[in-house]
Image (cartoon, rainbow over all chains, first blue to last red):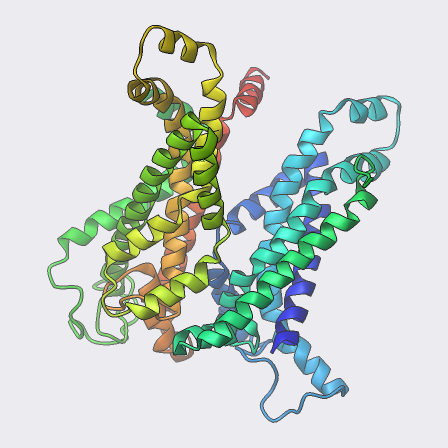
Length: 228
Length: 286
């Protein structure tokens, strides 16, 4: 069960985090351009939507109207899990919609937080000085602004890895994806307390490990922190 | 009223406010429905939208438009119950913990933090699968209210901590004000705006939780709410049968509701934040 969820969630979280940060930084940096405003407003409309509403909309559009992707499940009926090309392409086809729903929401959340942080960094003295010194906009953005704005976002990445569990539960149930979320839901429904305990302990261990890893690699990004 | 006028200048707030007023109007309409909404087969089944039934009828033989009005009303009532209860708890905990400090503060905050990290959804699924049949609107609202206060209690506490160090606190204590009336009369006015901006967030969260539970089939499906409407539509395979009006109505309404509540809360918190207020005045001058 677990490889399904871990694969889907880690890939979608990291993808949405990277894209959201880049977009957010660009939007925050060029805050008076028209297209930045448009991107911001789109994110503002998507962000409050809960997981299942968005997944339902995607299901109707892609699965029912356009018939591009299957309506649910992990892989086609009758296929055996193996490393053949056919199975792997099938895997991607079935994982695409849940992946897309989580990535869209993740991007809009990361984008907004990143935009706020970037706008605060832009008011700092060193950015004004760099701009006044005639350094190109692109260099200022990537070398000066993003490197400072990314620090709180890294902590956010660890926390979202922990928080994603409830989101995964909903997404997996909507798409009937064979992962930990579906397993947990069935366990709660049938009152299988040992299984609930096992899954909960597993998730607690995973979250703690993530936070520990983030704490350990934080000095790589932030030169102000040095472990004695 | 002056505050409302100031807020309505903001485009985001205006948009959200108009949508919310429209939804409230729909919710009030539900009082004028001539039949009992829980009765099935009042109208012929699966009619497409027409003049008589503006949003068609569903497979249970009910008019989707009227069902939607009841759904909005019930969802809003539930979220208000949850938000009010959690606000009351948050204000009490925040005030006590912020003003007294010391050991009481430490105890309350550790209690608060343990509430903050609880994985909510599994717990709610557990509770509602235990008392599924008897879960009325009010009970669900109270359960959601009990779980939704911890973050805001922290925010209120930090506000009180900063107020405690200010000049007027010393003046009030020296002039012989009782602790209770000091907290109630002097500190509460500072806390009220925070409460107002968080109440909207909390309402949106409560509606979302209700929809989640209903989609999983864990709430009382007799009561029409946004979530139970969705649940019936999905379980009757409305999408595959092509009864799009039945599935789309709750989806569109919940999207409108969430977006409007979010826009309201964003613009109110911007209004309360002194830094962005200065920016706004600057923009007005330009």
